[in-house]
Image (cartoon, rainbow, N blue to C red; front, side, top):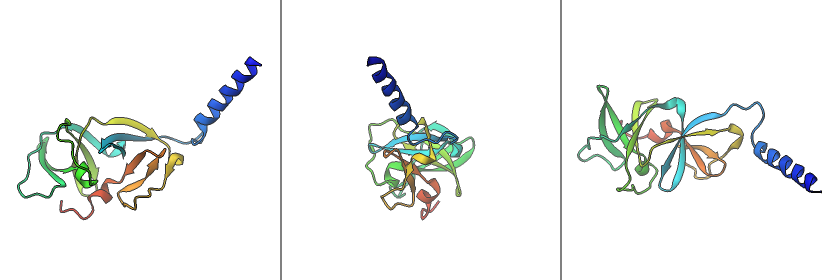
Length: 157
């Protein structure tokens, strides 16, 4: 009886592990960011660098613009991801900048942590209920997939 229970538990664990992932599905490589107590992901292929937040503020810039920074001789606009997503920024958090490639060119996003690598599968993607164009969907009910191009639409860059 004990052996049968053990086998049933192992089969159940295998089934649950494969529940939402198809056998031939290739994982998406993502970068996981924490903002305002929530988790967001960017495609790893869009990531150019993660840099210390050595940002020069711009006078009279909107709240969404953190400033500019010099990246290997190129002046890059840095946006405050928390402000873009309508969160209050944690002033005590150590900031870093995620340099991403967008249809507007290179853009820096100030974040409040060091990003982590994250793997996701398209079969785990659910539609976003927020109605924001900048969120492509939700992975496993907890990680929002950000569309950086849509996030920057309408901004003067």
